[in-house]
Length: 282
Image (spheres, rainbow, N blue to C red):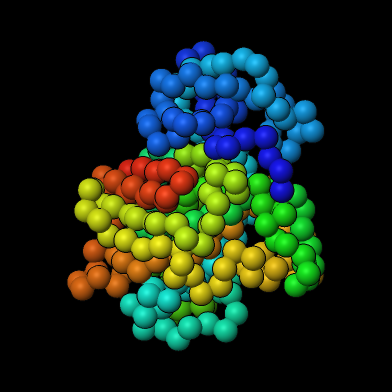
């Protein structure tokens, strides 16, 4: 899919106005305070979405998408993660949904409801669908439907993921409000190059927890998009979180679940880093 950006950032200026901009060569820096070229058009799907010829200074980096039709998660999709969990390699992608209000920005505090116990992080390469897709065949190229890639954290309450409480469903444990921060940019397929050869790392309070790469994926990007499109329209703007590497809190010995005030940073090569503080509600 042809897109008019390299790395797309959504932000506000000091007067509170929201813009989309081209992060360009400054994508690895703290984008706040950077002056960037802006786009005209309301969103990346606007037919007039193109560089405006104007610049603006970034005051606050926002979630790259103001809303999504749905976020799809792929469970148990890294070989080493399946090994640490003691689960068999699945024969088909394990798909679940995250509720709409789970979406959050790359630097927002994440409110943790008292019921969201045994809190865990999951650093994930996330795909943003660029146009509606349904019933892809082996002859179709799923990457033709990809707007770009972003960094995601599939925040999870392992307490509610327990099969006895969840009925074997993953979604509710991962769908508390703001349990799906993404960002800081949407990197175009051209900028990412090979999405299945990217370094992915996660830190908690500066301690490296996940140190993996997307070459450990069980089901690749194309396989996932083909699978979720069978008989179902996957709408443009849908985010697909493609799974997490080994190193999650639940399978450390002993488990190292997140606590109030913990800061989770996730970085993916060629895309950038998000950083979210866990703010436990009293």
